[in-house]
Image (cartoon, rainbow, N blue to C red; front, top):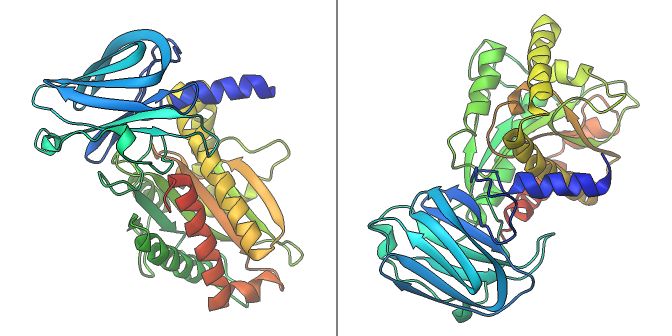
Length: 379
């Protein structure tokens, strides 16, 4: 796919992720995100501009310093029922019992243009908080359709230390995969908590979620499907010939041309079980090629994978094996951005001893946490 076509696809799927609204691609139509405690409406702006807001009855009216294309339509999200754009005026109709909103203008940054953001508390009780005019504060850049580090709700991330219990993963003279993944995940959790991010661990000790590999992977994946999770990160350690080195990050899809399916088979349980789960995951990947909502999740998963890979390589100086796609069962189903990262080769006489080092694991954890915070636009 050429670059302009790819860009158009990404812009399209972004409007659908979590909000699920298709409003003809009109530039004035908002993107809608459902979060823990609030609904977020995002209107694209031609440039950073001034804005003032007021709440009267069940309407939020925002007056902008620059005009937008005229547009109106219904909204089917918690706390809001409709929107209308007329020149410099944006009006959002609140649901019955709702009477407040937080309004802000975010400057261009992080690959996004300027935008007007309106956060409406989901519950009628929470909506008693008065509206805050946009001109009264200078907001930090925030993500458009996923939970962010605001006073309204804390972002939540699922960390999945690969393997554990009956399945130790790769084993070398230097490390065992289940030990490395758990240690790095716990260190990553500690750093994320310092920044106000809620963290869910699929495991916090040497255990499995089910002795049946398919059920184990499905149970891990299910922790990202409650609608309140901003990202799912599955952590693993690679194995191959002694000469193999480097870090690589995956998001879900068919293997890239010339890719080696053996890694997905191994991480999906190995042997006949791994082959069967990989076959099932590959079938899902093929079906998702024509599913616009699935493509939305994949687009954000790609962004998360790119940030993680860049941070890890910069922090460690490891061989950059890049961002790739493959049919990993654990990231097949999440409705949130989901990736799988291979932190290095435990089978390598260079990387194996590094992965056995607490200091190196801390470097990995700090880089992983920073990448996740970048993705959440959280300081």
